[in-house]
Image (tube, rainbow, N blue to C red; front, side, top):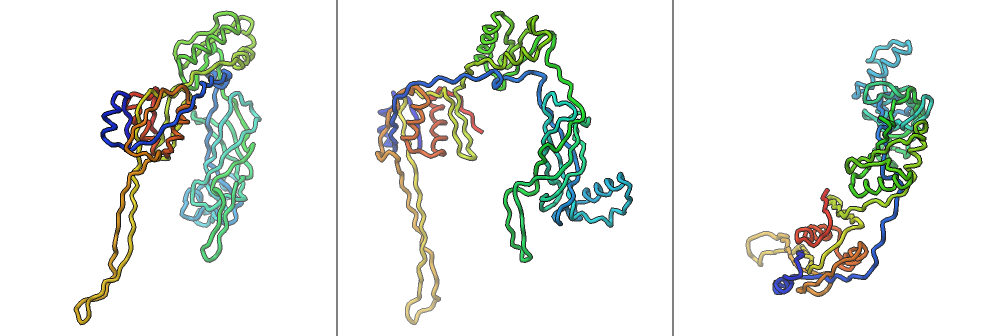
Amino acid sequence: MFCAVPLMSCARRYAAGLAAATFVLTTCPARPVQAARIQELCEVRGIRQNQLIGYGLVVGLNGTGDTGQARFTIQSTAAMLRRLGATLDPATIQTKNAAAVIVTASLQPHSNPGTRIDVTVSSLGNAKSLLGGTLLQTPLMGADRQVYAAAQGPVVIGGFSASGGSGSSVSLNHVTAGRIPNGAIVERPVKMRMVSGNNIELSLRTPDFVTAKRIVSAINSHFRARVASAPNSGTVRVWVPERFRRDPVGLVAAVQMLDVEPSAPARVVIDERTGTVVLGSGVRISEVAIAQGGLSVEISESFAVSQPQALGDGDTAVVPETEVQAEVKSPGGAPGALRVVPNSASLADVVSALNALGAGPRDLIAIFQALRTAGALQADVEIQ
């Protein structure tokens, strides 16, 4: 049972006889948010990664490939052999040493032809393991269906799998997916435009009006001119000065190295599925009275033998006996009392109070939800 109420209603809540836990607060000075480079806060619009995908075959497996149920593997094997000059009946092909896979990669911006990138290989059929396999040449396409890279090479598996004839098996990590370091060669670059109309636009990874304003001030102070402006909370537009018209890379490098103190949002993120609670540095709690108690239910079951009396009718039977006990426990050890929580000056005060409460993650979720309902939590609560 949990409640959080304003201070004026303490007497009425105390008369209700709620179980309470003691909050102990320590005084800690607020710690300033550390500055970060603009490079960590923003991305240059037009300069980004591109996802690549392809369908291929992994061969050389030790009998752990796709079985005949994966018809697409047989069809792909027959098509691959046909391109190499061998014509076979698909019904005669055995694919125990081959597996159909999906190959994925991320093409970094400004990757030139000949640059090597890592690829990830994932089984598509019912292969047991890709250990020891080699990926055959696989074209990798972008969202526009154009080929930008080609992948090939031995698959690296971070584990193993072994089984015996009796059905026993042992495995480590995931053996139906692996990587090929530097396994793909870039065949064509992606056209990217960094400067548009003598302007470079920066996109904030976390849109925020305060952070955008601070970035604008830092850029204008560095160049001693009004070259930056923020049309919205997620965009900072930088005008390219005359001396950087032929060196936009130097301008971007100079801007990205500037330090800016980002605005830390006051937010509490709650994941009810895993019981995870994350607090932002700006979280504060107003003065409230809090009562928190836990309900403990204990169920014990024993068995007794029921026998009929002498010369009586009936059979001996085993009868279960169930005992249920319920008890309200308070972590503070003082049930029936409300405790006043003073104003918190920093996140350290909030954490100290929650630690002194002794509540688990599930209890903290209920605490923050009730604090928000009572209007005592100066933060946004995001429930995932």
